[in-house]
Length: 220
Image (cartoon, rainbow, N blue to C red; front, side, top):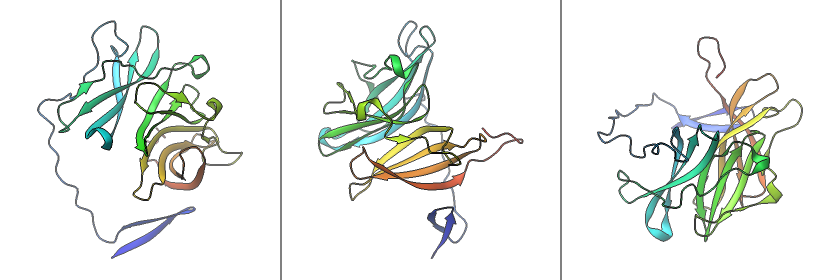
């Protein structure tokens, strides 16, 4: 049986007994997606991997963030796999880059697929919300909602008044978009929050899931 635990406005089910965490072994061929060579758009770092099953093409797709110190930009890259251990980077990478208003970053999120459309949910350099771009081929992207965040900062006193970051999005079996993100209030206290949508554009915030842990008295 499962116990239902309430975190503010969200009711979360969890096992009643202890959870056994399986043992993991590091893959001998790590890294599976390395950073790029000197002078490339991802020469300094690759980070924030997120993987989804691309059903129309029968493959795994990894979206990730690549960084170049040379121009201080974070961009979106893609890689493909069928196993998913061996990955091939998209030849046209980076497939999405920040525009002038977005600053130094337009990634750090998720790419998902639903009914003929790919959805890229991402942060920009302001971290004031979750933004959306869509594509039919994973290569040509169109920013949606006039470039305005689809999940924006909350009002005064809210859990995400100061910051909305690192969205992880999934499409549930019933077609609902589900987003987990890092929220920060005006006191710089962070938590994990949850929101849902039927179309990826209009979202309903569902509240705080749980607080982020603190380490040595700090709030990371």
